[in-house]
Length: 182
Image (cartoon, rainbow, N blue to C red):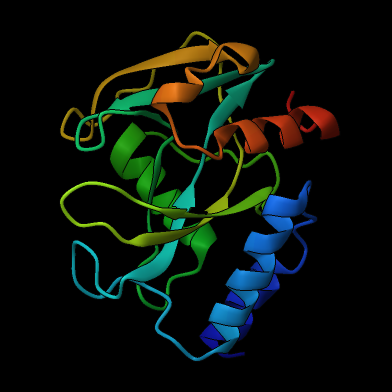
């Protein structure tokens, strides 16, 4: 199976919750099938559009977010998919690097898909597969201080939406509506 086929196999099971996620799915599938490079080959933004993963850690209607140093936003952990790497392996690797803990998937399939234009010194387009990880409410992992100033648990309905990824509300709404969170 080619790498593009592997990524397509990750995307296809995601059931869009709304018109925006459906649009992102159509765009992402067309991009994957176009033969374009899918992974970042040179930091910070080559190629301009590339795969990333987010892996929000959740428990009992709470989500763990980090005060991300370079973006200045409260973000779920995540990272760039390396060339040829399966996105689940990205989650496992990045969870170990950023949170210094083992990834405990709520489900091995991505829950959500988003496409976002980043801002800052090197704007680019992130195609993000969102995987939910199970955490323990109230416990803060030994996070990487080079990535985050702090980490904090937020109730789903108390996430600082003006200071986070614009798609987190869609992810959390989708999780809550499917009762996928312990």
